[in-house]
Length: 427
Image (cartoon, rainbow, N blue to C red; front, top):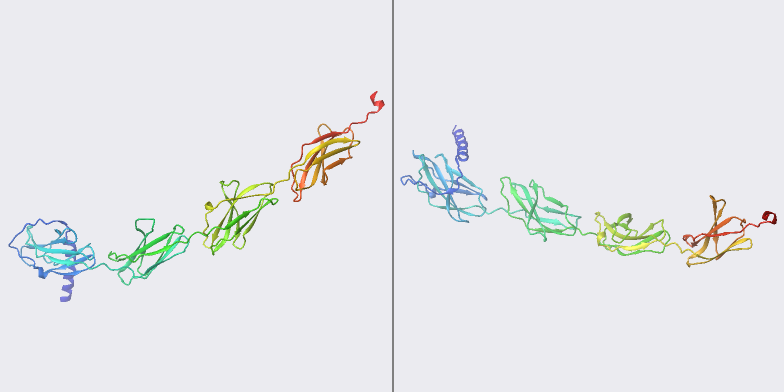
């Protein structure tokens, strides 16, 4: 029976403490009744915590008593006493002062309050201190050389009251620490920071937070560096003398984990570069097949590592290449009729020429003509006996080089063997 009564009283006291406290935080303006008994400072007991102090004092049980004023001074600041709470039940002799600073000194006084609003002289000052703040995790480290991310690991806090962690980050280029994550559950012990810049240093620190909101000191600072972009290739060489093809070759990057190369091409050095191919790291040559003679392109090649990081093509100087230009067309020096045949002479204007194509156009009527190709002419003279008198013939010449590239054709040279008119026809 006694235990039941004690339990009921304990519950009642808790309700009274929480329900009767008034956080006034107002300057002390007492209405003193000097006849009232004073709370003995020697009766004031306390239990400190990191951010709170629990007070207990000796009860004064007189008919006029209504409760107590709790008066506090922050000795770290101005040291001025202020009424922080009013307890409206004289049976209450406990008060929990929360929201305090860790490892700080506070002065407390308690006065008796009457039903008519008078109070006794305050007790003598009792100087009390909160506990020092608890330390953060005992070990924190971070992993470098990850692609645009950093992994942070720590040893789980030994205090079972810890509910979560607050992780902060800064870097040499930033002046402020920034909270980047809250990690719930004491046993969680890692975080991966993503979306970072390449080859940049970041620093991290962590604080533990208890279930009742107490935040630990900062941990030691750990730093890590994100992975740099792979190094550029060495010595890009591009051909300018191959038929219908531009060949690229280059030296390998010094970066060990390069797995491929991206090949970009543009029509001008400052133009828009489009990727035209991807080459494996084992290959450092590429043939760009171009179906055009004398075509000019500009090239850049980037490296790609195993994490898909790519070197910056903007930092590369483009290299120009071109396909072999078509040979120069020959120059006709003579187009004449000799006897019953047509004679053409010309001069070569390109040392690459190995043969010539002759295009023979016969005009069959005023609206139709016929063209035939006479290939593989190796000299600089052409005689055509296969002609009909009175038919107009045109001839164009085209140079052919050893690669089969064709020059432009010359302008058409026109010849016609006149008809032979008999005496009877003249009449």
